[in-house]
Length: 110
Length: 113
Image (cartoon, rainbow over all chains, first blue to last red; front, side, top):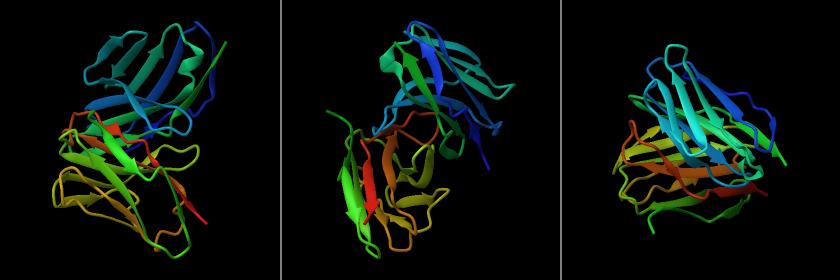
């Protein structure tokens, strides 16, 4: 059974701080990794994806991947109250659709 | 505008009824998916389809059925065999099954009354 683990939170950070969201996965065959943001009652929206070890930056967001440790993270710099949402980590291997973790709820306090 | 359209947004079902949730995409994507989300839970895969006239069971397919007669459409039927159907249902699509991101519709919230 392929599993993706996330701390359910809530993770509370003050406005302007860095929020760090973590995800571990069990399938060593996982090749692609995705971070989705989901506001309450809404559908998930893609924030970032990463395929290679290392960091990938897009605006205030940085995704970090370490395949040896089977670990992927999302950093949000200068956190804003509008970033308050549930963040879903998803992994994709060669022959199966996206598998998601249960998500981490982030609360940015103004 | 390209996107994925799910309908209806809210659906109420009586015990013992079958209901069908619609999902249409105009992104020319080959792969389509149905996920179920329960409160405080992640997304669990019900069914997926890589091409027209082909689909595969996901982790929780029991009590559900799908069809893929057209590339653009992937309807989900929740049958009376599904014992606990109240949930948020999400349809998604991607260019292919591998190494491509999935995009979601706005979801259908199904409630059994």
